[in-house]
Amino acid sequence: MTTNPLRFPVFFLSHGGGPWPWVDGMKQMFARSAREFAALPGCLPARPRAVLVITGHWEAPEFSVSTAERPPMDYDYTGFPEHTYHLQYPAPGSPGLAARVRELLGLAGIATREDPRRGFDHGTFVPLSLMYPEADVPIVLLSLKHGYDAAEHIRAGEAIAPLRDEGVLILGSGLTYHNMGGFGRASSTAVARAFEQYVNEAVVQPEAALRNRMLVNWESATGARLAHPREDHLVPLMVVAGAAGDDVGERIFVDHVMQVDMASYRFPPRRS
Image (tube, rainbow, N blue to C red; front, top):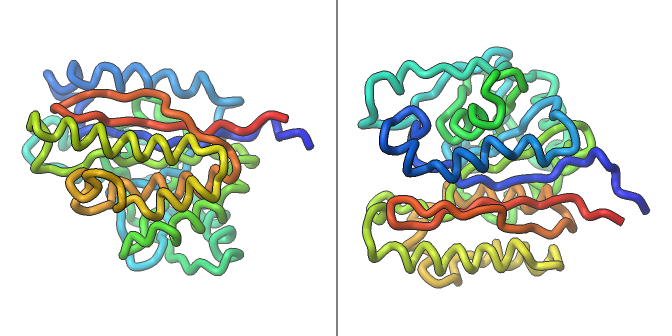
């Protein structure tokens, strides 16, 4: 059986801290991430007709999908320079894709809601502004579900996997380390590294069932709750893993910023 040559890979990106590309000092700290994000479109089989972002900054009682034609900005950060609260990334939404996402989840028996007001949080507009600076690729957001049940999020990813053959780039946006009290502390380096090693071991597993079990059991990893006191920034990876199906993942880069490792992964389509 031949794989569709235009099937899209799926990604989990560690998006970094706040609006870093527009903050002096921070943009130098995240220079590796900036280069890597900007290069991602070059590894796709075609220009996507749209991007579906599963962001660690949106949790809802049920899986929810953004439906705005012109999504607003959501400045979901504090303590940054005033100009970062006026940034604009005027990419369009895609009500058609939003409807397709809800259809696929519904076919899998997963209840959803729509949100016509949801806008672009920094986990969305930071990586996308570097990937597509012209803001000319439509973006739809899919929320996490309250409770962060890992297996449930993997099932949601499995449900939306057909989008990969429909010209849609599925992108999970979070962090492999997200402990606000640990950033900048030397003691956090070993914690972040050990936890990322566990996550990477799961991602590169050749058997999807084993990979998914490891992700469901992420709390068994060394330093798991030190790396993620709340798993909001980890659970987007569960959705991505579900959408990956039998495709084997790979670590594409690690940025070391504020004393911790922040890794990003890709699941490219298997070629037969």
